[in-house]
Length: 377
Image 1: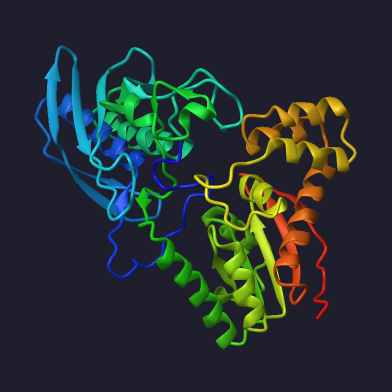
Image 2: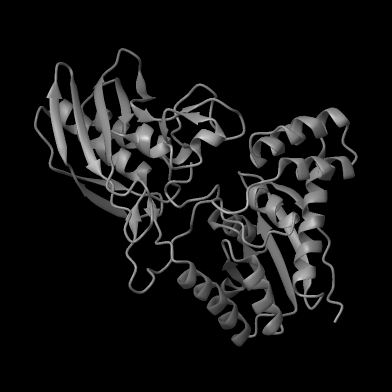
């Protein structure tokens, strides 16, 4: 599913890494194609380029590779440019077909090459298209603005990806229960270049800078959203204290210990924390998979009924396991996850750092917050 190099958390805006070029998500490309098709349909004139507003707060202009008129519809296409990112959707055409609708508002559907959700735990309706929440909002807002400007009450938007079904076979979508095509992804609109060495170096450098500026307590977040939530939770800490470590938990912890920092707070969501709790310090989605049997053992350790533990063991994703625990009112499950995260992270640095952890829900709600365990050395 993660074909845009974005995790459940997305990524926050950051300076472009030297020598590496940013690209655009499938969600941004779909929004551009949909807006262009709506403009062409309602103006009656072909569109060659279109500008959209990205969630990170800046505009982006896209050239169209097609603008076709049919009986009552217009289809536009954008070639996805993923920048310097090893993304299997790079070069794929993202299409949008727009037509008038008798239903008020914007009706968004998936077309050929866009996957259909068949399992829970993905934050999307089962049976619906695999178009994630932020791209949904981007598309409906952009097309809705065009419709309103032309006094049109309703439009239908169908997103398609030619050859998307074949491309999806090279992603995690089939395993996650997304069938028939790709996911339309993106939380910022931007794909940051994936360079393992460069990213790791930037994480270590951020810790070095924090230490050099007298910061004794750093917050290591697993992604952009968890960092945002941690900033809101810990407003007393300076900006330098927040480091988006991404996949490099072990490297970040060891560097923090080497720089003699006093305390580290881990901030993350259930997917990455599930892996950290098991001792996997590299948490990339394409690497170590979430072990739901392990999560079931954590649930049992937290006092969950066996029915819940077995349901968690059979969960499709870590998010699904979270939803099951929440539905059962088993808050101790999340406390056990954070406790294990702290235990594993302290072991990496042999007790040289005070460590605590905060587990966030997808809306920023704190699911669990561990006590701070002081350094032992």
